[in-house]
Length: 248
Image 1 (cartoon, rainbow, N blue to C red):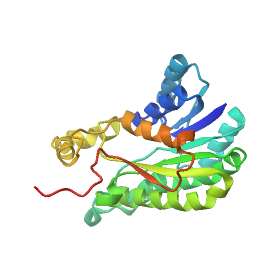
Image 2 (image 1 turned 60 degrees about the vertical axis):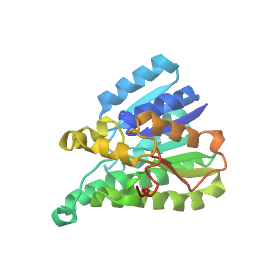
Image 3 (image 1 turned 90 degrees about the vertical axis):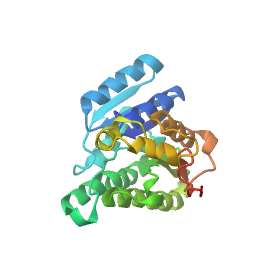
Image 4 (image 1 turned 45 degrees about the vertical axis):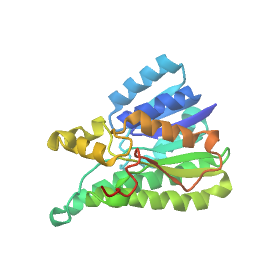
């Protein structure tokens, strides 16, 4: 039995990842701020894949949340083979209108919480090795909101550092960096800027916007034995939008 913990497990990317990992034989712990939605996703997976799936309602930024989360995984399964740090939030967009409180809130969710969860997870993962996958973003290459870009850039730095420190324990650490996705996470952004999705299609060589399943497939690969010699890497799930634009 292999066990995967997914934060933001009730969201579009989190639930798509859960379904793929269930198909690959993982038992699952889905952690999400929205406990009701997490339980609904868990119910669906139990029916579809007949795999043991636990839903946990938790605010990953709360004091001791990381310790409580990993303690719950240990109590339920006694091991952890894959950690997917997927929970995230946007905000703190412009430097000339920056609210320091919002800046701190974005970094707490996108960078500090993943770091603390990794720290707590290492002792449980050390026995069997495994894979940590951090969900970053293509924005580290091009810049967008001040808070979001800074936090996701920091998450890639954390990924590379932990790959070096945890490699001797058989723990691989990688990141995926998606481009703009057609997902619930971006619904408000699209509503406020209806030309945004078309703009991303135009800069993407594959000519379409990404989906949660695209990202989930990359995460599932990095969690698998097929990626057993890959660590410290960033897998861009961008349809080529991570490349410099070509003239003409």
